[in-house]
Each structure stands twice: as C-alpha cells, then as structure tokens.
Image (cartoon, rainbow, N blue to C red; front, side, top):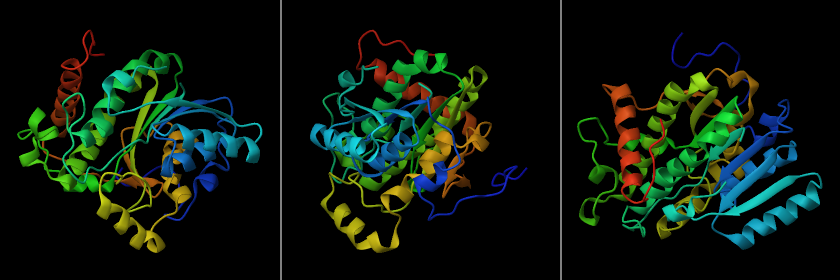
Length: 309
C-alpha cells in the first residue's frame, strides 16, 4: 500500500474543526494529558476534548490564563473534567509531575539564540528534551493504560531540517550562538519529534502504545513565536488565510481519538490525513541515534536519571 493510502475513506479536510472531528468519536472516560494547553491551539484542543467527556489534564506556564480557561469551560460545559498542572518546559527540574492519551502540544520558536538554565538551546529543549523527559517519567502510567496513544504536534517546518545521520551531534541539536539559525533550529527540533514518534512506534507498539506526529497548520495565530517579534506580525498578516485555532486542533484530536487510526501509528499527518515527511537514507538508524542522543543529553543534566528501554 502506498505511503499516502489508507484502508478507509478520508472524512475531513483542511477546514474541519476539532469539534467536527470528534463528533462521532467516544472518549468519555479517557484521561488525556495536553502540554501547552493554556494558549493557542492547546486551548482549542483542551476545550474540544473536555466537551466530549474526557478527563483532561493540561500543562502550561501561564497560571492566570489556565484558570480562566477552566472557569470558562465550567460555564459552557458544567460536566467538564479539567485540571491544570503548572509546568515550565524550559527547566528539566520542573518536568517531574504526574494515561490513555498524551498530547505533546507545547512548543516554541526562538527568534534569538536563548539558552535555558540547563545549558541547552531553548527551542530544542522545549520542543524535544523536556517533552521526552516527561514522556519517560509517564511511561509506567502509560503502559498501565494501554491501549494508549502518544501524539506529537510537530510541523511541516521540519522540511527545512539539515539533520542526517552523519551530521547528528549534540552541537547540531543545541548549537552555540554563532551557529544558531532560528528557522533551522525550529526545523531540526520538529524533525526530531517525528523521528522520536517513529522510534516509539517501533519499540512500544508491541506493548499497546501507538504514536503519531502531525502538522497543525501554517502560521496559525498562536504564541509559539513569543520570543520573535516579527513572528507575531507574520501570523497577524496571514490570519485571514490560515486555519482558526479550532481548525488547527483538528488533526491533533484526530490522531488522539479517531478509532480508525488505532493501527496507523508511526505515521505523519496533515489536514487529518497521512502525509509523507522528510525521509533520510538510513532513516531507522537516524531514529535510533536521535533517541539515544536526546536521552544522553537528559542524563547529563538530571542526576540519577535512568534511560528507559
């Protein structure tokens, strides 16, 4: 079967909303974690899932906006089961909290070179390392909840990556200021999410865990470019031609909840349909190498951390 062919008909388009995608899905009783759920597409994701009866735990850095989201949900959907967990993905020490579905929605685009307190380039740490650390921490809980799903909100921006097996190194993933280019860093971090998703599918699927990576849409008006002033301007100019936040959340909830995707893990999705990502020579070896290198980068900063199988 061709890479973009599936054993069922396409039901949604680029203009479908998260609410439309979930209309015929049953997620009541499911517990779902959404990182970055306090702003942008994350808010639309939390709202859509909660309104369908799932228990939703979401993370974020902005406590006031998170509390406002919960208040609004309780008014519009009194039965909503929603809880907020403060979390700063720019600090590995902060990712030690306590699942049917885990959605890695949090992300950032760094307009200028920024280094975290752990010494890593900020966009790579937020988009990859901290989310991987959280996933490793939650692994026992996820495995007890199988069948379970892991969803990485990646980006078609990954097509600008320059990562290959030969070029892979810690410095390539988290470069010094003189070698740091915002678009490349963003592309590399989003490509790593796709590679990690594929690795997880290969190694965890036998235990009942399926993994998906996706592109939510181009230049959606979110806070992902919060460190880049021009990014907000571009998003504002593009707003009439891009997806709304609820449309941007559609592919996320599709991967998280659609029954027809239960055996379609390991793929990359766009507009609620399968899409071919960047594929390198020795792709399987690159997936393995990225997994191992990212784990080592966490080990170097977190005393006592044990790399999961």
